[in-house]
Amino acid sequence: MQRIIEPDTLQLEFGRRFPSVLLASSSPNRRALLEKGGTHVDVFVPDADETKRGSSPEEIVMSIAERKIDAYIASPAFSSTRLAIAADTLVLINGHLLGKPQDKHDAERILRELSGARQTVISAAGLYVPGKGKVLLEDTAGVIFRPLSDDDIAQYLSTGEWQGAAGAYRLQKTGYELVEKIDGDWTTVVGLPLKKIIDSI
Image (cartoon, rainbow, N blue to C red; front, side, top):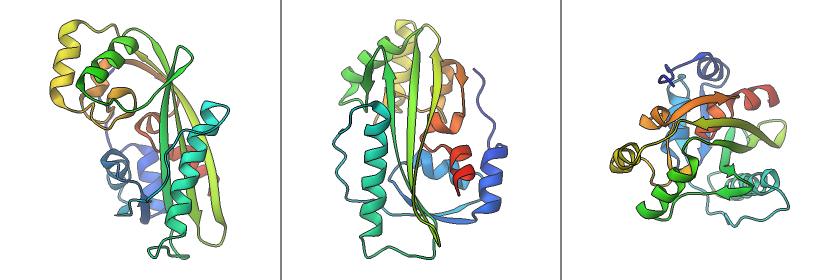
């Protein structure tokens, strides 16, 4: 697929409505997603338990996002007058979850599994909305990878983009070159479902 031209309409709409947010996440991709739409972002890294607990993938990712926003709300950094967003993302393929690769070898294994296959990306957000309180939501998008050669995989691994990325790739960087098609909101694949967030506030 072609690189997504940023900022797109979702990013610009979010930036227009929310010129400043607190992002309770260390993810550089989530921060860039917001900043490219014109939103000023301050980052707070929550000390939250990210153990996967739940009876379904959606419940797991929602639970982690909720724990992250709860950690922010309980922290000295909390402000009741400012929109705050925490998030978590999981990748599901062939009935099992793919998290962040443990090392380069694990990233190679994940990319080989994703090659030519359809995956489901689930991103959840935990929000603190002034005057409204805590809001939880999740969104799902389908991603189809093109068949990857050994050279494709080796070249992508050499970028280092796989580090810390659910599914071992980053759509906003050169990871888009691995993807054939996205069914759904591309920001959900990045890890912050902007359309669902806008619709929920």
